[in-house]
Structures are given as C-alpha cells and as structure tokens.
Image (tube, rainbow, N blue to C red; front, side, top):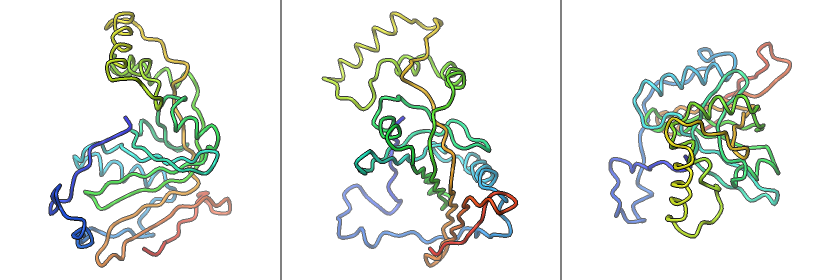
Length: 233
C-alpha cells in the first residue's frame, strides 16, 4: 500500500476556497502527556499508544508516512503499512527495486510518521533501515492473501507502465501460473525493512497550540538507554 484516502475536516468542503484555509483549525482538549507517566523506553510507549489507536476504530491504524532521501538529497514520502514492531524497531515490506528501496540503498536514514489525527496524536521516528532476513520475509509473505502475493510479482513498483491493461495482463498471467491454493514463491526483489530508531517523538494535541511533545533520544549513559526530553510546541 502506498496511498490511503484523505478525510477532509468536518467543517471543510471539497470546494472550499483557498482564502478560507487559514481559518481552518481544530481545538484540542485531550489528556496531556506527562514525563512521569510515560514508559522508560519508546517501544513500550509506542505499544501503549498503538493499542489505544487500534481500539479506537480509526481507519488504517498502522498506516505511516515513510520519508527517504536519495543520493542527491532529494526527499520523497509515501504511506505504507507497519507490519510488525518490537524492542528492535518497526518493520514494513516493499519491493526493493522501488523508489524507496533504491533511496534506502543509497542512504538508509529515514523518518516515519504515524498521523493519528482522530486522537490528536502523532508519533515521529527517525532512524536507520536495514533489510530483514529472508526467513522472516518468507514467513510474512506466506501470510498475505493470494492476490497480494501475485501483485508483488506483477508490479515493478515505481517504474513506468504503458497502461493499466499491461499491469492487469501480467497479473492474469501470474494467476494462471499460480492458481489459488498453489504456492507462490517469494520474489527475490521483495522483502522487509526493520527501522532501528534513534529518536521517537510522541505528540499530543493540547489547547491553545501548547501541545505536548516528548522525545526519546538514545543515551548510553541512561539506565534505560534513552533520555526523554520535552520539546516546545
């Protein structure tokens, strides 16, 4: 997945003039984020928040914006789905030949953004991406729906294609070769990345734009390996 739908604010209309954009704002009144109440390390705090988000019923709670930079410093961003997280970091899957794959080959530094707007929350991660092992990739690939497995083979992600018909023809050829129930091999050009965080910021909206921003930063001198600092909004 590289795109998700965008929901306009309740008071916005698709034909809203640009001159009215400056007046669009939301007032935040959710509970604050206190240093004394957060977990000692970021992955535990992320787990707390993610469980809240998953229970809230919002669409695509695991959707995140992945931002990368190419060898010339040109940034790019896209929405992908988080597929696992643990004490080691965050895992997502993609075509290694895609634009993000090529950019991560040139520069493994990246940022993740989880935009949980209905809860007035966001999480911003900066870190380094590394390819995960093929066994881990294969285990996830086999858990995907049959059609998604075929789609991974059919699409040379990020490369131009002559038409939609060309893409669908490739998919149909693969569907004939690997019918439902047949084992689809894992594409050698497809797999996962694990993002090891250097910093993780938790953002909670508050009144008067005095938002709470707590950032975990790696600190070998700290008992937990992390320092928590409050950032001005």
